[in-house]
Image (cartoon, rainbow, N blue to C red; front, side):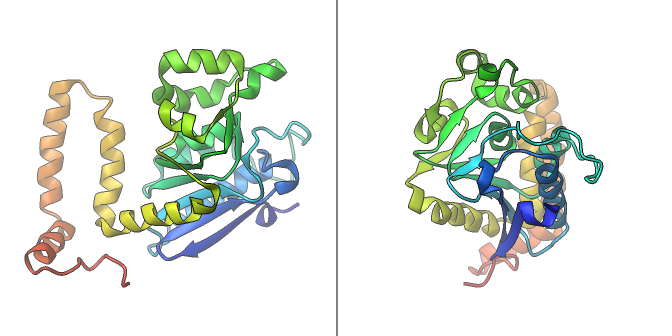
Length: 256
């Protein structure tokens, strides 16, 4: 199977929908899938028409974790690691939305936790299933622990228990849980809201959340004071404030 077949990418308005397309094995993570997702992310970030990126799955699963039946080495596929992919999601200048349509186990939860916004089917099933096959959720713990906290993570990692989309919201892994037939509309609503913001401001907001949360209090104030002044001096800010005064939409807002 070629990388072109394992994922699909479609631009709808300002959102690029990247769909994992291996329903025969519940979109399990393979070398091909990782490389293809990574390539699509890079292409979407280079496309000025794309304001946000959506990751979802074909069929009843979002991503069932590692492909345990597939080969772990394949000389025909260039080496892009799962860590590379998670970093690409985290470092993407454009917001990444996980549209969790179904099962998200193991590494699939890593994709979820690395995303900036998560909207789930309320009946989707989640599990840190690694312990059930004698391994641990090692790599994905880096992105999952900040959202779950030690208290929740300890129980979920040790038991491998399943939980649904509504529980994922309560635990901090998802922002919203909706009926399955509402998932695409709910994602479109969020993508449309993102498109109302200045493109550069959206990029800087993503940096802001990640960086300021890691700074001591006084360093945070010092960094953000300069950051705020710099943002107010941009052409984008001038356009946004002019649009507010003139009671019109800023130039970056898509036409209805």
